[in-house]
Length: 151
Image (cartoon, rainbow, N blue to C red; front, side, top):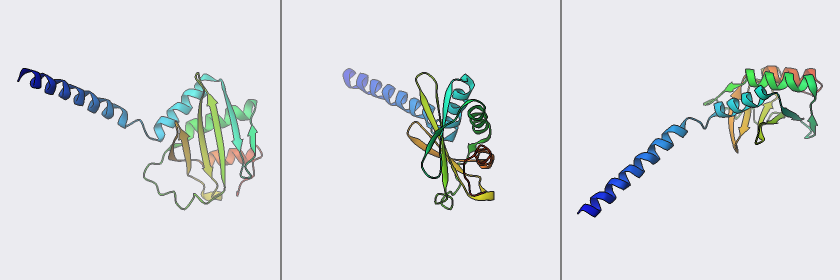
């Protein structure tokens, strides 16, 4: 009896630990985790920014345009959980990848170009993709620095 009671107690402790760990990590798998990672990268000041245009060509940004774009994205995009993005997924898209940190981490933000109606995009981080909104200003800035858009 003592052995089975001891085993049951150990089993219960293991189950409680697993439940606690799952609960603690359950809220971290959202766009907010990608946005937080992006903000941490930008705060270091040591990062690269690459833009893949609608034609699929990748361009590395330098100096001021790199800094402005990274700061704009990290301060403006927000979580769009629950939004229906099915209507924008077919629109032309521009991908911005920001890489930095030690070890190096890449956060990608895809902006779906819907002309004047542009608002939504996707953030990719740690092999997960989440919807984000407030991407219109990002698209405006991309147009300012020479990337072709529907606008």
